[in-house]
Image 1 (cartoon, rainbow, N blue to C red):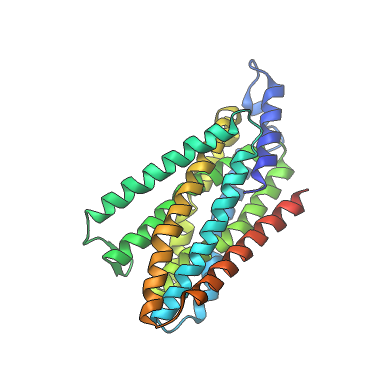
Image 2: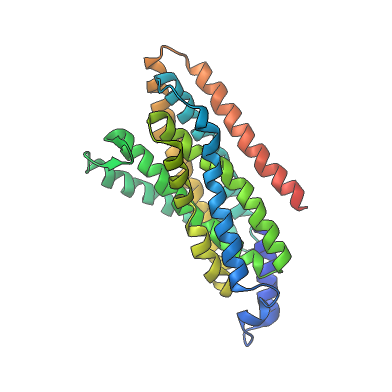
Length: 286
């Protein structure tokens, strides 16, 4: 996500140079719709690679579930911080206000979604049901929602130049792998096959190609929406991490007669690892 700021700046700059009487198609001449679709789809597919490390997961124990949920929470919190910072750094005069509006909408979205799921206690998701299905489905919904902002970032970056769009797509593809791992960490320890978890991870990223095309064609309109989407995703992911994943981690660790210190170590490690990936991608772009 830290790459989308440069893509937004370059794309909006190109759009402004076209002028109100120009067309977006001529501004995007160095790239094609087919190329944008190809790279944004490839970016979404890499999310499934995050499930591969869990091929060795065999035992489903309270301790494994606690560690998995805690690691997923750490990754979500790190991604939330990156999303918020990215929104605040977008080259728009009222970026802070847009991020705050998006965060408010994200909070309301999570509250409404959670209320809906709680009214359907018999809901089933994959091989899960009840409270586990509600929590997992909420995570998938949040991951899917935040992928819309990623798609906008990809589309806008291709309006700068095709080469830069390829770079941003590659960076986001690398970023998607630990996000896929976060999804798989919630599904696999509870009995979902790794292949199915990888599929759900990919599905959560499908908005990327869906939003990349319209953002590529109408960069000026979508550029202003991006900080709102980033704020929305940041608030939603932070809420899921703090009020869904972490509480369940503590419950499962209590069953395993473990301590919160163990969970704190896993949480900090996952947070630091995810943030390190974000910063490495950011430094590589400079």
